[in-house]
Structures are given as structure tokens and as C-alpha cells.
Image (cartoon, rainbow, N blue to C red; front, side):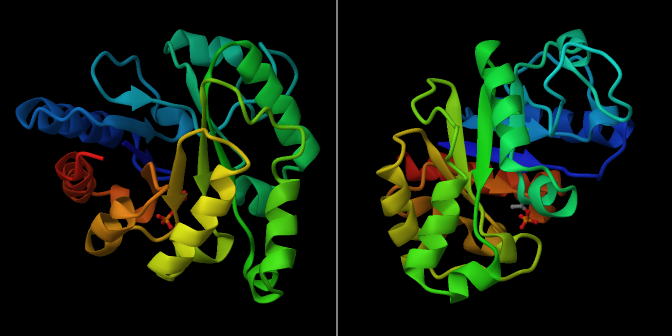
Length: 235
Ligand code: PEP
């Protein structure tokens, strides 16, 4: 299974180094065979050799250039990063990235062979508008995306569940994952208020191939517990 931590705008470079070292030690000591990914803040990226895959939370669709505040391929190459998160709800809804911009970014990093974790998910008003409206909204997030890209991982993250402590019911997660699997056979993660107390049940669901965890992953010990749940499930 795939267990991913989005550290967002948290943990300094020193804290991230310690965090990743703790994960590496856990993976080795416990013979973990799951795919573990960590997305640190950009300024906390470091060269890394080990089993944990380090990815970028964001990068612009460019090698380099005049894009103030952004980083490009040159900066990822410096740390040998070949994994990127694209379409996270905070980038769509807080930072205003459009589907068009995301497609451009997707294609740029796809052409370079990056592993892409592409996030989708509906805001609360779309969920409350009924299944048809909700699926229409989610389907639009697939527009322009090569859903058969071999290095694609999709993360279904309802916007209203991110960082709120609210989650869909297990039945709802399973139902939507089953629908989403018809759009792409790429591994499909669930994200949105996953924590130690609910991760085991979520991971056990059919068509859930892993989890993307934000707040609860900030504690290495908690994240390791979730990794262990995945390992024990032997899915
Ligand atoms: C996320 O940011 O991708 C996320 C799932 O956050 P949280 O676990 O805090 O809801």
C-alpha cells in the first residue's frame, strides 16, 4: 500500500531531517515493505538516500525562469526529487490554481517521468447537492489528465474533510472509491482527517490503496503507527 505524509507549511529543515530519520529507522527495524512518501515544505527539502520517497508539494511547470516565489525542475533535480503532489485542495482553493494550470503542470512533470500524486475532491456544497452534482464536479478535475499515466497515483480528498476532523463514512469512502476506480485504475488513496484512530478501518476498505495524511502525520510516531497498520493488513 501507499502511505503518504503531506507536511504542508510545517517542520523546519532540521525538524524534517529528524522526522525522516525516525521514519527510516522504523521502516528498517520493522521490515516495512509499504511505499512510504513524505512531502516536506519546499525549504525543508534535502538530499536523501533511503527507503522513504521524498516528494515536492509543488513546483512550477518550468526548468527555471522568472516565476517569483516558485521553484522549477532545476531545484528538484538538485535534490534528485522525482515525485510531486499536484492538485491539492489547498492549492486549488486557497492559492487559486485552475484546472488549466494543473494540467500544464501535470503534463510537464509527466513528460519528465515524475511520480505524480494527483489530488481530487469536492467541497461540501457539491457533496450536499447530491451524487450527480458531486460526481460532475469531480469528473471535471480529471479533464486534461492522462489517467492511464503509469506513474500516476490519485488521492481522493474531500475538501470538507481536510484538516477538519470530519470524514465521510466508511461506506461513503468505499462507494466513491469504487466509482473512481472506473475512471482510472491508478492506485487510489484516501485523504482527509485520517489519523491513528481511523486509519486502520480506512486502509482496510476495498479500492483504497493507501492514505494521504496531513495533520496526523506531523508526529512521526503516529505516522509510523499508520504505516504499521498498512503493513499488517498485507493487502
Ligand atoms: C492533506 O492535506 O492532504 C490532508 C489529508 O490533511 P489532513 O490529514 O490534515 O486532513
